[in-house]
Every structure is written in C-alpha cells, then in structure tokens.
Length: 181
Image 1: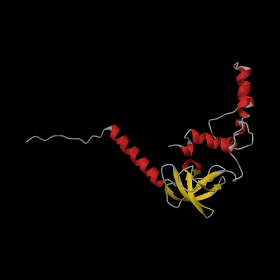
Image 2: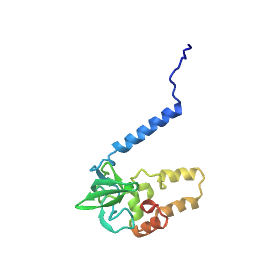
Image 3: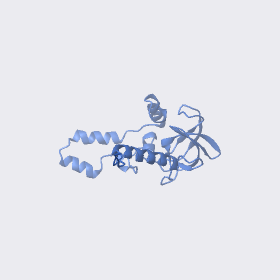
Image 4: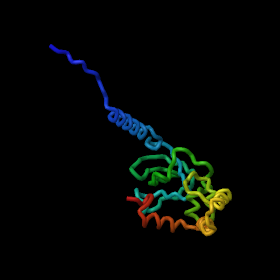
C-alpha cells in the first residue's frame, strides 16, 4: 500500500474572493442604513419624501437638511422612512448615517446649484471634486501661462444660477439621480 502525502492548499484568488464576499455581506447587514428602525439624517435641504418609490410620485413632505428619519424599509434605490408624523420614500443618496454639520437652514454646494442664490464654487464647504478659481489658483494659472479668456471663462461659470425646477427637470430628462432606471 502506498501512502500519499497530501497538503491542504488554497488558491489565493478563491481565498480573496471569499474574504471579499464575507466583508461585503457583513458590511451590508451591519451598516446603520440596513438596520430596520435605524435613524438616518437628510443630507440636503429641500429633500422630497414621496408617496411611492419614484421621484415622479406625489410629494408627501419636503424635509430640511439634518432632519432625522426612521428607516422602515430599504430597497435598491429608495428608503422608506418616517419623519415628523409622515411616512414616505426618500432616494437613498439623500440620507446619511451621521447628522450633517449645521442646521436645516444651512445649504451646501449642491443646494446652491439647485437654489436661487449665487455662490462661487471656491466658497463651497463640501468635499466635492468641483473647484472654483481661488485667488491662489488664479495666480498659479497666470504663472503657468493660462490665457485671460480661460480664467474669465471659469469666473463666468461660477456665476451661473440654476433653479430647483431646472435642476429637477435636468435630472428627470437625463434619467439621473432618483430618476435613474
């Protein structure tokens, strides 16, 4: 009789895939958003709570930035929530697990894009990748030989105003955000 010397071996890709799947599943089920009854907060002023899981659905209530909501149900794109005695659906990217800094009257850069006020991108408190032309950046651009027309073009773009209705129509027509398929 011959004995075979066997060692247990694992393929590195199989182990990595298994670890990734376990972390993904654990992250999904342990995240605050997945816990039924968890409290989340509205990220953006003028967030719509709708009757159904659709941005085109009737608006039940408009919520301010920082409003706490209780998560009742979670779907792929929307969370069913209750707040201020009302129940409805909110697009998942309008909510956060941590209360945002400031009050519901504060507005971030995206609010400015959707509102009537004017604000230069350089004044944005958000961590977005959109940047305006700060005095330092303008000075650097001039040193690098950037044309006056280009600098003026950026300054003109910073002055553009977009109403809430125009922004909503743009999102709907482009099937973006909560209107996405």
